[in-house]
Length: 426
Image (cartoon, rainbow, N blue to C red; front, side, top):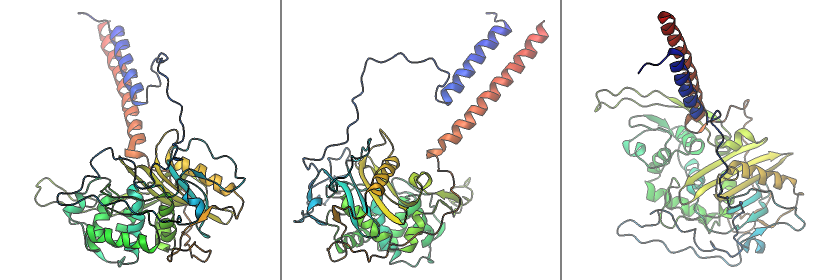
């Protein structure tokens, strides 16, 4: 079959343009005909009936299946009266008298806004409802580690560290890491490999979990039971918006924790080649970035901790400062629609800052179980340098840019080649 040069050019150019459009999200594609299927309008999950009063929602995978020879822990008892005040015993929305309407598009099933300095709870939804914490439970591990380990001690990475499930910062066997660097990886990048390396120094996973649960009890966080150091789901894992807020407030009394959640990026060590793999090479160091997008996008953000598993969904705890007032926000079982969890947190923080000082519906606990007092010394992070851009998930934006540039260059090269080809035929 004979094809004219100009026809070939048009066909190939059209194909290249379609390929580029696919890379860039289909900006040049034809509009899709309207669908007859309607989407159910978003509604904030209703918890008025106390569906999670004793246990978290049913799992979607096998995370609650106990190991052979073990049994699933019984649900934690429910304190009476509710810890933090009688109003916090409610399961629905709890607001101060005369408070304005809540912001829209909050998909978090449970949440809380509290004052870091006074411990006052300003507003909440299902405050003692029980949910899975995901990586926000690393807040408890961080408190234990920061108060136990020598941060200058250097440990050697193991294959067991590198093989853990879930999010990994990139610890490799034979790498040399100070405990300070492991804490950076734990708090900033939510590395489960870092959690494993830290737990090993606390006596192993089981011992670390026991220390985390002892800490929770000492803080009167009675909805909380860790099952893993990292936040990977396990039988009996549970927390609440109230408890996570209390744990975060306790962590914020540690200056290094306040510094770590406020840090945007740091250099992290590499690790040597594996002598068992002939073609392997040394693995150079790299930069790790804070995965909390509120830090980059919300004025006055102090930092926080993110989390996600299939069973827990999105979890989040963070803080911000405005006009000398420091508030924290906690989200449990959130979704990325209609807006992302950090954006939901931003709206709830705005709501909390707009409430008059003294507005409260309860209080976070002190170590003896009594309501918190303004005497808690909450640490302040050091000033941040000029904001760095927020990290893109999986390098998606950079990849799209590279593919787009490659597509354009391919089209130009193709046009030049065909032009020369057809010119010789004339």
